[in-house]
Image 1 (tube, one colour):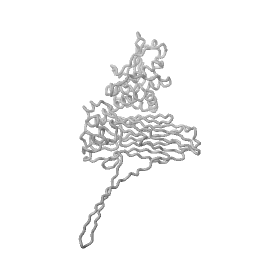
Image 2 (cartoon, rainbow, N blue to C red; image 1 turned 90 degrees about the vertical axis):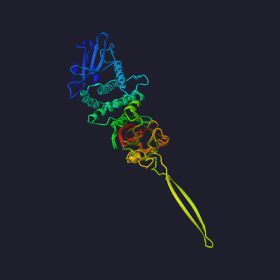
Image 3 (cartoon, one colour; image 1 turned 30 degrees about the vertical axis):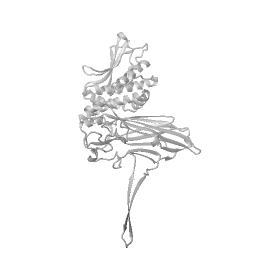
Image 4 (spheres, rainbow, N blue to C red; image 1 turned 60 degrees about the horizontal axis):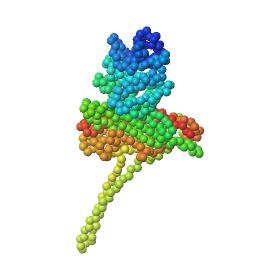
Length: 492
């Protein structure tokens, strides 16, 4: 028995199947997605094994001679009449998640244990983790003519609002370490897919598969951001990257964490909402092994670096907002003035003595590579971190360096991950903490809002730039990725 192709609710379909002893065949199947260029579909089947009273799930290509692409672990039936009770559903979700992680770039450093899942979440977790697995299986296992059409369908299913909301809940449930592995699996798969399309001169249309999520709790707002480098929009570029350099640049992903500390203080005439920057961490992480980057690419150290981070924070409902105050002044850099004086005497008797005085003045200005600014527009607070070129003093994000600059062996961006004066961590990321960037922004809110929960919109743009590190090339580029999330804060 087969079900028709649509956006299938796999969990509900399985729940409607009759008990195993009422099946008229040894298997049931449902179409996951169809291919316009092939008579085959990507399908899911459930097969029973009568002697052991177990079932197995399989993803297969339904050609005239079916091709099996993935098979689950055997699932042994309980005394329940339903094929999927809570324990069976949990076991299958664990199976899906573990097999997703097997497609990752690195082996798991520790055994994976999925925390117990609350029953109301079982259905959504089941469907989302299964579609994610089907997406990866389609990329790595499916025949080309089936893969090309089905991948777009599966990608669109993963980008729906329901899928994105479920993915945020699942990531929080799995924890940060498993979350990172999960996102690197997906980013590696998307990178491989994009490279395949590029080789055929095809373009992946639709939204950039940047993944972000946020959560709000007492005293903490947190946003996570992940994006494969290859999917980031190019802001500017110059020259051309050879095959080795392109491999190194593409097989990395952006990972970011933004932590803000909101506090509420009730005054006599208004409420003050102060938001401090607690931590902002960005990394550019490789998606394949260092050995592979050295072998097929230009090396692991040829990668983008952060060059600009912009955040905007806005109360969505502004009825009770009185005003906004920023705590950091605009830049007023100090200048050091060096004065050199020399005195020359001449004595010509019987004439008068002459004194000649010459004065030379040199002005020097010092600045840090990263510049931080706060501004306010209406009731929106803006935070901007910008990297500046230490030679010319211009912002790197919008700078197009000359070819001569790119080959200077002592330029600041050469050996940028081992230089003692590097503006990055040794791994190539940046960390902005409250020790230097912890200034706050304060909104004054009418006391009529006391006890209410307000939604806050946080949006951002992250810029990454590539200038050659050790590799000899004139190629350079800057990319950017944007995100938007909603945060909550209770006034009281």
